[in-house]
Length: 235
Image 1 (cartoon, rainbow, N blue to C red):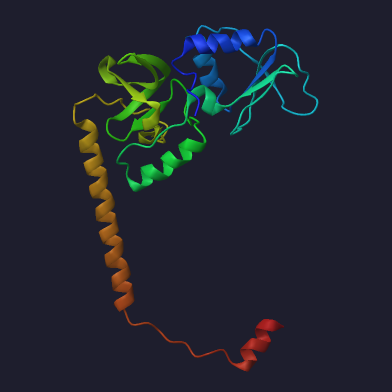
Image 2: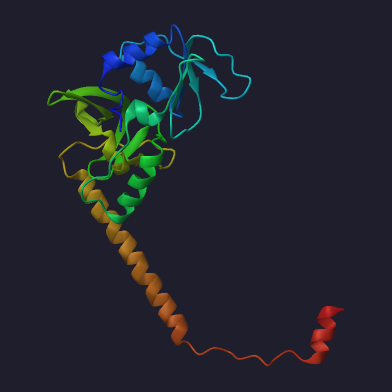
């Protein structure tokens, strides 16, 4: 499998340079992420959006098609190249020991990597609580560049989450009142999760008692419908 372009700004620049003499179409539904990726790679001429159909005019330039395609294509004779998500960002791998629910979502991410939240919106990290999503960042770690999600917490704390751990983050779904951001390492989130878990457990036990009581209560048996009643209902 080819090495993804993330973390290889030189290769990305070469791809953009190729667009001066050929049509280079990037097929991805992640237009915002694509723009950030190109900017951080030094490519500031963002692609124009097109429709991949029979009416496509093949002219030199970088183009963007808002679709999901699993395999790319190259046709030197026509001066056309199609680049996919996998070529740009790579395929996400599951954590080594994921939970059952995490496995299901991670398997989905191998097919499609989309964010359901935008920079500035509130998110929840399963281990660290409520934060504000600041955007995607390309950072160097141990000599290699990797893509991270930047989460901003209270007191200017920041957490950089590798994209392969995206399954641990979800968009915050709350009421109209904006919640307070959690502090990293404070234990506030763990205590809040503990209280919520106890409330859910108490409600479940109460429901179990109610249904058990209903099952034990003697019921009332009604006589079957008579022919007269059936004729009346059908008239």
